[in-house]
Amino acid sequence: MFRWLIVVVLALVLMSGLAAWLRRFGFGRLPGDFEFRAFGREWQLPIASTVVLSMIAALVARLL
Image (cartoon, rainbow, N blue to C red; front, side, top):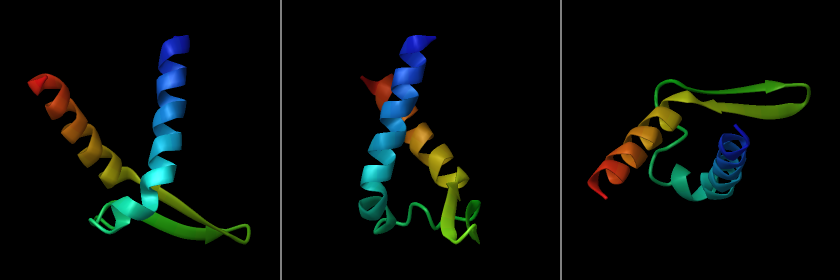
């Protein structure tokens, strides 16, 4: 259980660091990615981008 927590935290840190770079390729702007403003801050829920990146990662893992 602790390993999965570490993996999830590292993935979130990596994705937040690469967010600006991935936006150039269209990730974060797919249908199903939500952006809204609340509490004086802009929030993002990239649901569709997460699914696409997960499928790419699974494909790479299967090929290796």
